Length: 330
Image 1 (cartoon, rainbow, N blue to C red):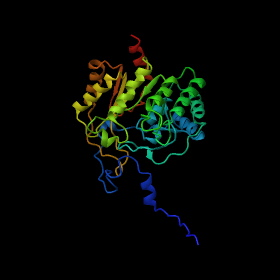
Image 2: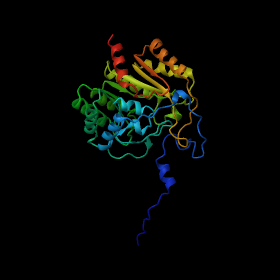
Image 3: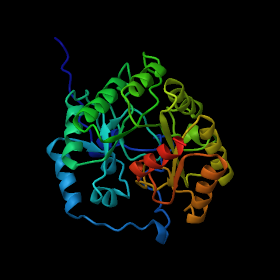
Image 4: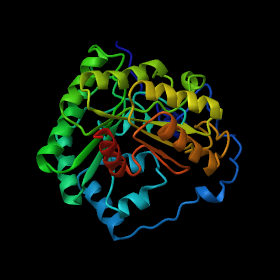
């Protein structure tokens, strides 16, 4: 007689553990972690759910779309949505990697939605966007890292709204059957105005904060983008307040400039949860952010550096692109 297979019933705690976000489980603070220090005044955000915010949220819900504004708990969501700017999250809302600062869930993703590029293009048109940002989760479960899906999304937006600028914030596409450079080339060929890939932190902290990625690999991807298309505007991001020193930030900025990176954003790390994310190491003063901007633009010659406590990689993306394009045209 065949033995009956009795399914295992998970407790609530076990189910939540499967969807834990952020730090690797062996280094996460755990449910008994202490509360973080009170945020300084310059990090306080005013909630402003106006008509535009409500309309954009309804458009997303009606089409089953995801935005990184919500999934990553961005502090600028009210400002950006009221200004009719949003960042779309493609390839689902579950990531195959786990970074210590990120608020997107880590779990096995669902299959890609083949209608998602068209849905996003429709939403861009309905929202009347002049500049659309598209980011997405890492899809290590797919041979091409979902690069074809990324390219299809760029193409769909371009067809629906030819005048709309497009920025893509992509993963590194490494570790798949397809070579990462081939995956990158597919996205570049689709014609985004800005090709972004985030470095996030300094070499010393990169292995523990951004496992699954590689410091040199991320720099290499940005370098490849310029090799594939010489006039491709490239962009990256650094997060401060996770244990880095100021001199290390300057060195990372120099490494990015050496790849030809045109635009850089730098912002304060805000711990999404106490139990399962890396703690805030320090609150970085606005004066330090100002020094980073001066160094990047005046010393390194970057086209644009957006640096401030609440800055995120997609913050003022349209303005960044216009400024970068103007400087690159000189």
